[in-house]
Length: 296
Image (cartoon, rainbow, N blue to C red; front, side):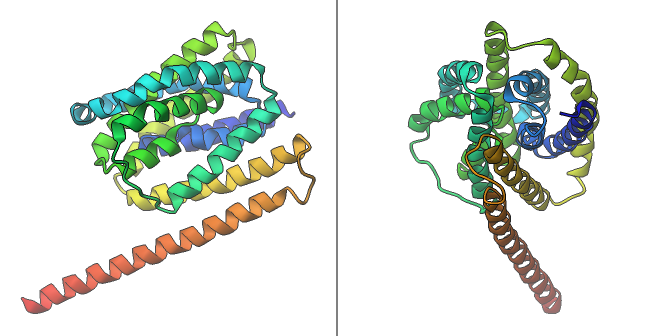
């Protein structure tokens, strides 16, 4: 592996991911991991990202603390479920083949991104009953991949949380999961000199990207920005999964790139539907405004 290329790629993708995180309140890992896994294994990448995410999530929680009072009771069952999932996922990361972990990461992430992109909504009535098993699944996924934003965003959007409550609830869960995972990694001896060398590459990107994202989101329509970010993520994950399937010998080239092609086609259809709907809504609002002016 070209270490210089890997370093440059890590700096660029973490800067982009931190900007998205600053704008939306999540997305750092789900954007960073698909690209970074092309150069690093999960055993090296995860510990470095988790250390960064402890600080990032704490910051996001602090700036959205006004929404905590309305949402903290609703996320307690999820937080309770996190611990066994974190323990299991951290142990799996220590013993499972790195190539297989990559396949699992990409395979889980791709349908979750496409579900979000489709605007999937299904209100969960038994929220408390679902919370603990859902939390365990999130803890397992996060400690194995450092990704939890897409499934958490799906749930919180489905449950109708308003913007600040959404961000506060998401940040609270992610503070607990990142802190718990960082502790589990420490006890399992996953921190190394290679991990320490990655931190100076990531920290400046985070310090620059998060305030830039917070600035941009005040000037860009949030839903459109989020949707474009998901398209980028889906294409990168599709490419990463295709490459990894070749690396581990599950498929050969060019057959493996059917996965990438399928992801691109599905996302392109969803993206077309999204912007078509936005255009229709804008046209209706413009007609309503014209009618009101005419009535006056």
